[in-house]
Image 1 (cartoon, rainbow, N blue to C red):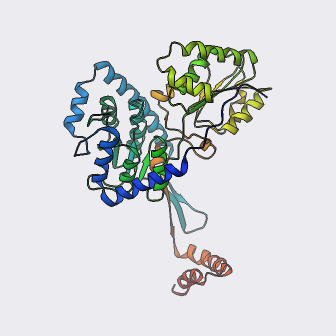
Image 2 (image 1 turned 90 degrees about the horizontal axis):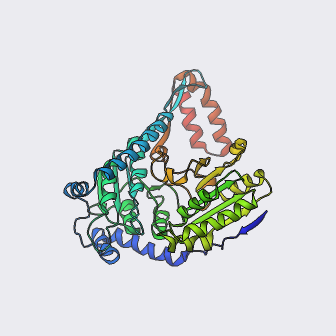
Image 3 (image 1 turned 120 degrees about the vertical axis):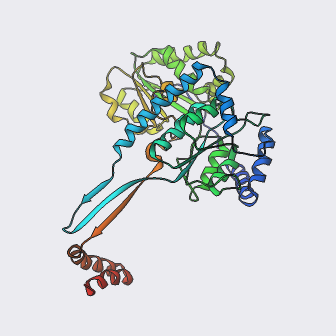
Length: 421
């Protein structure tokens, strides 16, 4: 294995300072509620609105500002995302009438959470696509109350118009113009204007991520996310210009984003490095993309595709592209947020409109979790019912096991049923 381009090690975030700041924000929101949300809105975004909830009139005005094409594009993307979410939901069925003992019935119910909060970032870019990705699966899952928030555009009291329309198209029940760690605290603990929720989903900066971490337990979260990343496994059948474009698409997200190419072809690796430099010159977002690629971009030459699979699984990337002639290696990939197979399957398609979700695990979290999906908002809860004959058969077993653990009260709870037949 050889590095044709090696990435710098991502510096450890100033975790302690961030943690302290976020803890202070959460404590203040819990103590003073909306007063603190308004204070932070004004300080960070220049948003001086008193009522945090966005009105129907504001939403209608956002629709009126959209072109027919813009609305059609959002609706088509929403339709694709909704159709895939509905197909996923149909795979998640209840289980009834299972029996491992005569007279006993076991099963499970698939139950949506009562409420969720969807955080839609609004910093460097208006990520209206994220509104669709978060809200639609929650609604398809059957969540009764889906609320969404996003910071107002700088110096205004309003959420970006496309983000606002996307939230409405997706089906949000309540929308709030508030962002940052303070919005996560409001979701978790509630304020005068915002009722608390059961689950929080959505990406964000390090303060949002840290707030989700600190609030976990009070509420559920999707996962703890870091900077975005893509890893492409490719052989000499791949087009270096296409791969370079995919590297830059990821790199423009954030100076900390990471694009990685793992290839069996030295010529391809060198061609991708050259193509990235050529494409950067005409890229409007080159300041961010160049910083990200130059610092964290990586090109790795491997001995064979088996080594490529092994390396990809070690990276456990958020997005995994596989562009190889021999696709028999595909089952070997087990650690990824979302998989994109073949040259024509752009990672950006999943970002916007293919139907799969783009809210995915980063920084190796794909080793143990997938991305946001319908199941994020569902609980699988078991149940059981015993008739007297089943109870008579299992109670002695339970009694013995409980007494062996020293839990006599547990044993008596089984034995008393036998005694009172």
